[in-house]
Image (tube, rainbow, N blue to C red; front, side):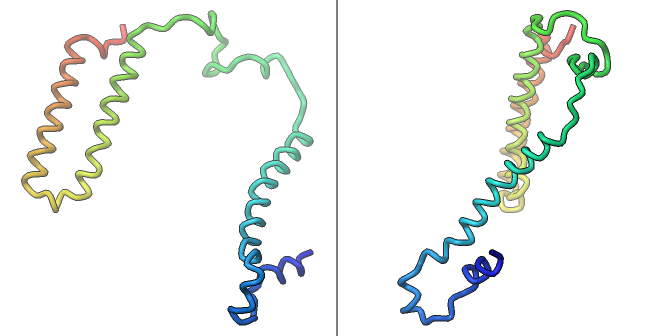
Amino acid sequence: MIQMMAILLQAQSRPPAAQSDAPIFGYIPIIIFFLIAVLLPVVLLGVSRLLHRRVFEREKLMPYECGIDPIGDARERFSVRFYIVAMLFLVFDVEVVFLFPWAVIYDKLALFGLVEMLIFIGILVVGYYYAWRKGALEWA
């Protein structure tokens, strides 16, 4: 089997005109790689399923909540403030991502790039101040 794979994978020593009749040999490494990529996870998951311990104790079946016994229903309602803070985090986080490309080409932008980024950061600070004054960042 290994010898056959080695024969299929090695470069052909025939002249280029003779190689045109069998171009499929160039795809053999890709097919082997694909088979390994599909079979390896399937085999590893199967072996893991066969070898794992099947011990189900009361503690093992309880939902995990930071080492503390869960109190109350898991489907209770959250305050809207939680979602507002999460959305504000995402908005400001995405806006800050724009700082990286600016920092990469800062030397090409010179003074113009500095002024534009100061305006951008100023707009972010105004938005942050507005959210702070409206109480969107308060947890209580």
